[in-house]
Image (cartoon, rainbow, N blue to C red):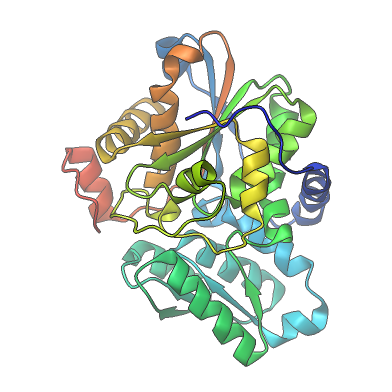
Length: 335
């Protein structure tokens, strides 16, 4: 699904904020490894690297954006506390960052959120409350709650400082592999790909940025097709971290239009197969959203020969039940 070469928005400001964020958060987050994969490189005839955000504190890239947002709040705002909405990873990240900075936080999660992710939020001192069945209705409820309580709402993606924080991952990729040619990124609300893509495109406009989504919840891809954010019902998917709707007016949308060269949609069998293959070859645990990016790379492998390819392994938080289902080939989407 090619988007074409037209650029819709100047992303220079986002790239600059990402570089500033990388400096601001460096004492609070890990610089994650960029690991060369012998097995995948040999199979694809390319130089394949995995950016291991599953090794980040809290097990996902989300700590970058949450930390940057809290650090850019005024002290008075931090004292009032914060509210977030999350399918899990953003919630754990906000709770972790808030704990480090002495900020109280309440995290709203969809009712079907995995026990592993709920427990992760609680382990970092976050107060968990359940609301809604789709990521978008949970976000809307949490934002209204924050307004009533006078607390700061930390969006998982619809915030320039959150996007900048996620973009720090792109800053590291450039430092670790300056001649990167193609990058695969799982997409939900678009915060990670907006930030990373802005940084990479400023570094080299010819870097191919591929957005990766499950066919069961392709909201951003379909919105890009339509030219505006659309509402559509998401189906159950192994990639629960990217599932759900997008806020109308989200600032990620024009950024995604500007930096993403194409989208790849993958089905549940492809996701599960990619997860099994990755975990067998790399001896590393990943969650469904990361499996989406690996599956998308495999889908496009014929166009990657000889290139320096990076796949962002966005997270490794997966319930034991779902992990066993994936490993055994029982492709159940619920857990």
